[in-house]
Length: 448
Image (cartoon, rainbow, N blue to C red; front, side, top):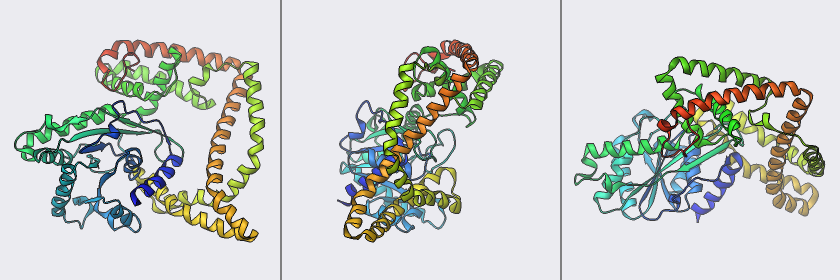
């Protein structure tokens, strides 16, 4: 009962803090029965296990670093969820010998047909690519197989648009399960070679599901190049599978043809800066504004004005809790990979307190005022967030319209430059495409 109730709360919180895209899970592995280990990359602190917590539909057992169990509230929640502590040398003061009990408990859970979740990088981090994987996951899986469990490893790739920003996108992609028995030997977890092969297979699976870059400065280059490629083909930009292929092609082009890479990079970066000056995207260069489209936009936004009083009431009610998590980040000064964790945990603690305060404030209007606050605060909060998102998008659309309406020559020049650059990128994509298409990438739109 506690597990389901808490999952509902966490789901509500994370789905409002982030925009979780529909999960890519072609084999429905998140619904797998029997002994399963869900393994994921780890770029965003406690948010990563939180996402798996709300997306896996069965009860899962988490492994978490031991210091978290000593934290107020969070430690109580982890114990309530039957999480298992992992004692790491870098945490200090932890007895790593206790890990034997944790590993035994993990193996026993799998033998009983349960599911566990692991992040084999061993730590949350903000590097642009996977860290070297620890072998604990492979050893647990092989040990369970040696005891008769038919264990499957399900790789889960998590990619954030901007992991520390409110309402940024989160893409979750699930790979084909790995049958651990294919790597097992009679020696089980004692077979060092089997452990290495399984660990390498997990790394390969996670690499195929995530956007791995040599350096963070490559990210805007990849996104702009992919958007221009989409522009040339009349497709929507921002396709993660295509971006992953572009990242692989980027690395290949840099290694094999550095002069060509530098030239293309300079052109893409220069074009990207010109777009940033006028605050538009490659996709917006192709917008056509017909009178009927503009008229519908105007009418629709006039109708939206009817909700403005409710929105303003929501802004007044929630302006303080909106700023408190930002203040908590400034005080705590967390690393980039745990900033969202601080914000989300602050909201988790603050939301019920603020709700209670608003209910108490409702007593100023008597019993009905308090009941109105009790029932009305959650939908008011959701409406305020929803209304704000759409009004911000509408303001951006209007700004782009007026910019290009008044500066037709600018739009034409940028569009001409963008198409020429897109054709150059298309040529490189055609050349490198067959070599960078991976199992996670669709045929066709690949390369850099």
